[in-house]
Length: 347
Ligand SMILES: NC(=O)c1ccc[n+]([C@@H]2O[C@H](COP(=O)([O-])OP(=O)(O)OC[C@H]3O[C@@H](n4cnc5c(N)ncnc54)[C@H](O)[C@@H]3O)[C@@H](O)[C@H]2O)c1
Image (cartoon, rainbow, N blue to C red; front, top):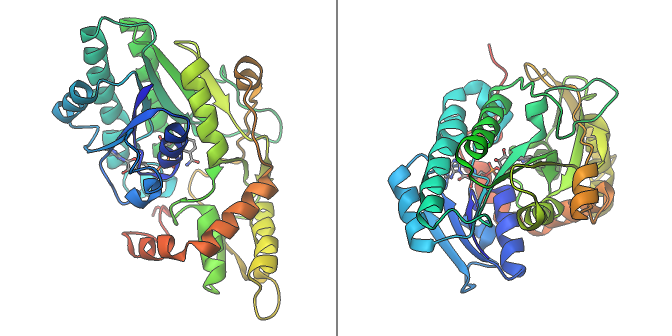
């Protein structure tokens, strides 16, 4: 299958590109190369004859039309997005433009192309979204495919809007879409502004390990390579018009998560004295910080036979080891705009 992947130079998109090429698919990686992108993320597969790169912005409709006409994909996997909640608090405009308007242009370009090639049922527009569209859970319950939408940050509101557009293009125009809403990802090539790489790299630099609020916020973590496998399963086996909730069933409070990372670092890269956990520092909370996310992945398990391949502890161990052996990857990224700064505090 030839797959047009948007955002394939980012964290999850690059894992999808690598997994798709290794599974024997052809990939057209379309990416605007924002601050969050790095083509080194796909260096392992970029010499493959089945790989092509298109430097384009999803808000640029003529560029999208050219990409569809030139490459004639069998499917689209749409991951291009502004993805950092804290940046969405400081500058929501980029999130509306890329996540909402960009998704609209991509849908329209895909629809025009799909109609031109005779509206094949087997075509797929796979929209990759987040569990954050469902809002914030209390101590009980889990998100599933029918949970009502209740986004609470500019980021999650922009992703919710894009989910609604994708469903509307299915209902109104018949475009064969599938959607997936996933919990927090972690793993190699995670941009060093998100919690897990921040903790690892601050610990290695002997800096404080910042935790928002009291650290009680709960997230359900999934290893990025398991997410990439799930996405390829949804693309291949998912029913048109259906959505799939994806999660690792690995709920942890932020404080527990950071303590686990510290104990791995204490073994793999110990401090001269004491534990890395001694550097944990509580900082002012994110405005509107969702208390808990958790996913019930029953549908993707039973209908598509997918399940995570690693536990959170195994995945974290692999991730910490990866950062320890890939300083040449992450060191230059620390110089990028906003990295290492406290963002999203609001006034
Ligand atoms: N990171 C998570 O934990 C998580 C969880 C669930 C869902 N998601 C979703 O998965 C997708 C990928 O997330 P990620 O963490 O890999 O993001 P990322 O920020 O690492 O990568 C986003 C990529 O999109 C590209 N991009 C941004 N704006 C673009 C534009 N206008 N045109 C073309 N390309 C553009 C960037 O250059 C970058 O390569 C997003 O849609 C996100 O909402 C992320």
